[in-house]
Length: 104
Image (tube, rainbow, N blue to C red):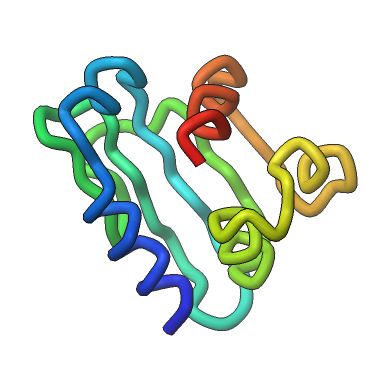
């Protein structure tokens, strides 16, 4: 589905530089089609992304619908706007959440 595809693209786009400069683990709680728990690990060497809980504790947990997640990662929905309008809920380290937005 689109969510799995998005995470495949994220995994493919990871570089050591991103991991070094971000040093954060992001967990996504997605509702709706293709939802569930997904993660992006930009702390462990090499980085990883995929379905399920992250290999280490998450620094940031983001909750949103899977449709909005796909829109956000394809540039059709600005993370700031999603957050302001209540479509995106963030728990944890806000500074890291902002770093992830820059990476998008």
